[in-house]
Image (tube, rainbow, N blue to C red; front, side, top):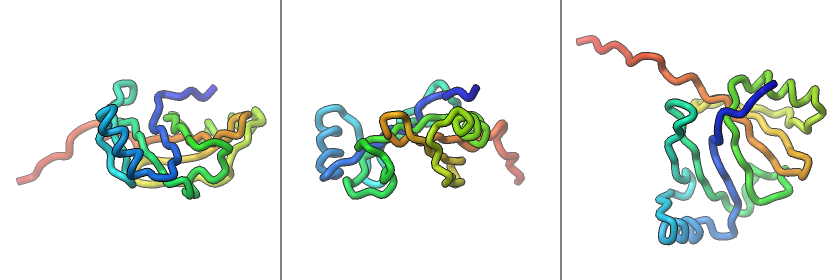
Length: 132
């Protein structure tokens, strides 16, 4: 059975992201930038960070969700995880994406909340050799 290794990100919508970013910085000390969010180191996955980001209310990124938020969970093997979920009858989005950050897929929970699954690219096992 596929298991989550950590939370890769927490994303939510706002009518005014810039103002909400300012509120979180003023009252909770979260220094973030619109468009990229804030990053928190993650101890459970070496080299990984948890992203916290506010999206405009009109974002298409969470378009299929019935709620204004989405959690990103880290998995070891995206393809196997999605296949296991399909077999179990979970609503799996057929669309997946690959980027410099890794592979992404999406499912919906029974309440209609969109859930993002992320298979990060492997962390380098050694430093590159420096040639003089």
